[in-house]
Image: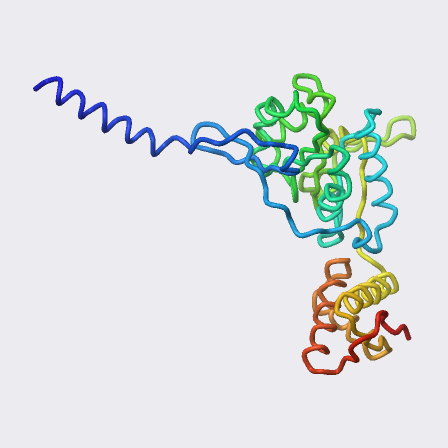
Length: 304
């Protein structure tokens, strides 16, 4: 009788534990899966393959040629086994920071590039993540999107350590690419500059500023993404209209009235960026196609 009760208790305990433990995850076949996401579990975490995202090509990213060149060259150095840098891509929302990383994966996956996506809060697991990929015959970019910290966060400290290499350093087949709307990944306040001093005609930052710079300064490359001027914005809109027209096999006249609509769209959105330009182009082209105002059969859009 006692053995039966004990057996029942053990069965209940094991059943409860099964609910707490994550399901078994198969080892990722990196030859097939080009990207993975770190997923936190009850007691640890694991890498899960990501489904192939919608194709985005480097040529689809308009108006950021200088930024593309810098990040692509660094990635090519990395893939060739040459020295390369961790990158901080910072600047205005919607300017193509994360899209650039996805486009790089699409372009260079056949040459061995792989991407591991990590949420900001999970950067504390960097050592665990790296342990799972350090012996693989691929080059990995650990990518965290839209990152900002408050002082003292554990993820901030781990990222700082990984970039500096003083306590924990990723292996040679791993780089870290981070995107942020903040240049130094931390909030900046007017009071930060009150500790600045002038010594021998040189400005020395106060402790508040030094702490903010201490993380961003560990990235080898800073790649800045700024809002477009109105002329840049209109040019990108026109290019997107052409691309969408070609894709649909139609032609639409791009004229002064269309430009005015694009400007009004950017004012309503409160921003001028590649994302805003694409959104307007999609709305403008799609709206005219729906209204039956297109001429079907042409291969190129008409420029003004």
